[in-house]
Length: 95
Image 1 (tube, rainbow, N blue to C red):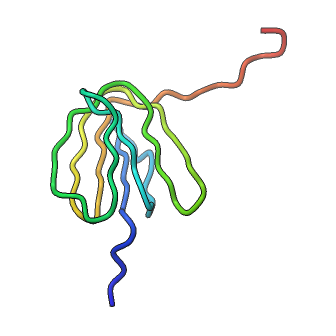
Image 2: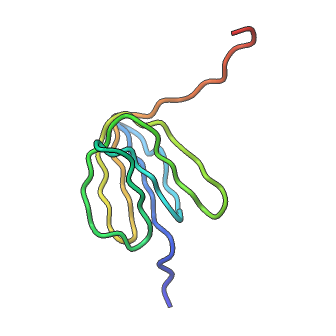
């Protein structure tokens, strides 16, 4: 029996692949608010605003800061095309 309990998540920015993983859940920053995606979600094309993309595999949750873009969603895959990602740098000592 084929496993369908995970989503293939890809995040693509100009000139590079940012992320390519199998995940259990994705939370996207839609233009009208956050949208949660689980395996089996109906097909959808979604505009994205600036915000946090959260993804979970098992108990481990991670996130990326996205600039605007869009996502294509199918029952087994989420592909995010973004203008870029923002790196969060640790604050310097004394800041």
